[in-house]
Image 1 (cartoon, rainbow, N blue to C red):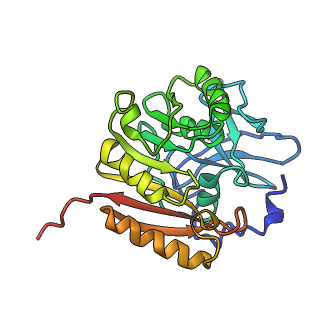
Image 2: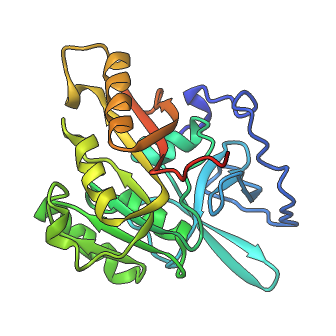
Length: 271
């Protein structure tokens, strides 16, 4: 992967990747010639940047020694022990693309409980599992039984992942398996995905909790301009008591995609 070759300007994003008080002295990683010199905490809790000749987004591996989808692993010396990180490929993960695109908040952090709709084979789920850690939980809902088998295999080694092989359109079918959550992440690529997220929010998302929805314009309306599709989905969210707070397109990683982050049933403002 040529991380520099995508034209990403880290400084232009306005992020201070190093201004976080984290010091990794004498790390000196050799990641297959990438020249990585250390893993630095980025402004989003639980997410790191491998700094070097080619910067890479990484998460701390919850299961050291294990890759999930063939991703690179990095071992970092931390005192007398080593910490392992996993490369997070933005071309294979909408959430990673949003982070590298400069999103302000994902609300997925250590200890959080997350409902992931459209979990597929568990690629991004595994990184969310890394972020929330053993104190958090990831309820991963996937309708496809084929992808579900891969997801279950991921969960066998990650005790904070609970796979649910069900249709996200019918949350009542798995209401006994899932507790209240802090965040819903949705990547279901369906024309009625806002309604799907709203139904699940009614069952599982705490008041004042947050949602992250990945929108693929062609799946909503292939005849309309992507910008018009995104605007229409934002209006639908508002009608479902979902208040959008941030919207970001995913170029250059995904074409005609956007991510919307917001809050569900926000508490009334104090007078």
